Image (cartoon, rainbow, N blue to C red; front, side, top):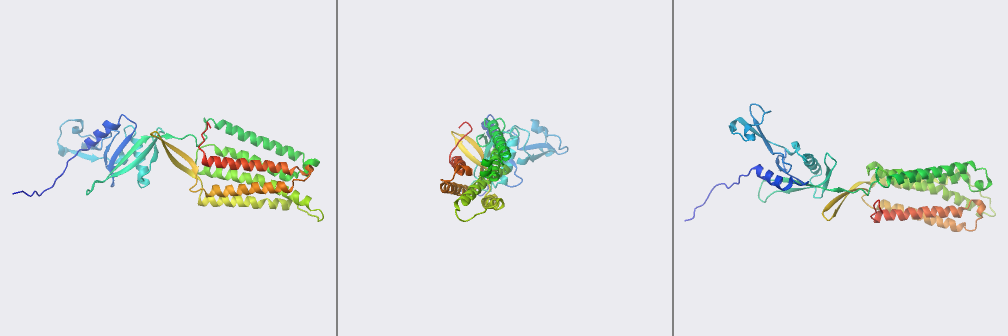
Length: 383
């Protein structure tokens, strides 16, 4: 007759077995693997760096390791075994990567996607965590794997990059040239041709162009919250600051020359006031998106033939700002074309507004094309 067995079936394992397996398979590589308990205080099971998961010390003197830990026989009642928490892992090569990955994954709630960490030597690693929990078991272990990754260098312009020097040179030359023309035009303000060209608003236009060149310097440096916002503000605001006085200047000239029988007067103060709506509208758009959808450093993970690359780009959560700015600048282009058409028969002595509007049109067109290219193309510093 069959016998019924009542009892407990258990499997005894040693942490040394896990440690030996990880060390044998990963210690010769740059990949780091750590296994630890999911519950606090997150006791270490094993780590591929070779750091032991526990230590034994004398009960009478905790500063002295138990001789049995060195291979000598000693009474077990004289020794105390202390398990190591993962947050206390240190001393071996790449233990710093294990710690950084642990803290980052725990703070993020153990996401499924890759997280990037840096070692103390500034090497970058891609890390991923997984929960090991066998069915119908109270066992809950966390496994973290960190492997070397590459870091994209095409999204920033830093000292030593091939574009760093040319960008500084371009910005400096642009500011100097605009400054020269600003001073020269101001010094000739009493000349008849310059007076007819409405020198005050032309000087404002040149100053705006100088600010646009100065905005070139915001493209340099790391992608941070501050630099991402500066880049959004500098180009868009300085562009409107440059073209708004040009619009008003040409529009005022059109109003004055098109009134054949009715005397029309538009003072400089009134004209200056008319430059504000475009600038205020642009500032309002920038403030709105600064608070609701600002550009910020965003990690982009790319995998190419087994190589994982981390890119850090300035990116908003949506394309709403890009769409709004495209509509605004397209509207400026259309308005410029309309003004140019209305003044197609104006005499050149009134400041050559058609040529000025063609220049404005080219600026807006090139800016729009560059914005589209930046958003849809993948271009690095080598082209």
